[in-house]
Image (cartoon, rainbow, N blue to C red; front, side, top):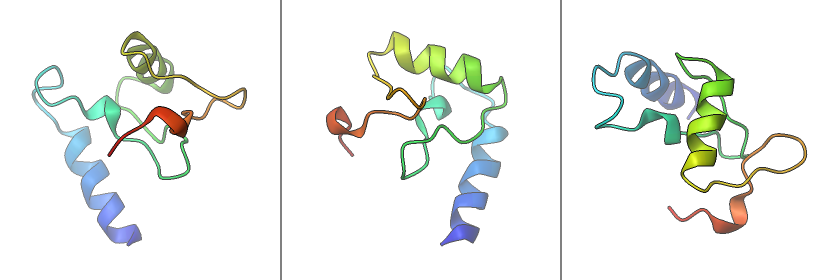
Length: 67
């Protein structure tokens, strides 16, 4: 399972169309943000603009996330 996450992360990092394929929406299963080529602050800002809420520890509040 870890290998799969690394493969997906690597592909998202090379995403040539970040506005069309919104890779900033990929988060770790426990709600932490993981990585983002443009920085974690930018990832959190983009998610917040989309209405994503965060816990006091900086993780995504998973109670309103549907997948």
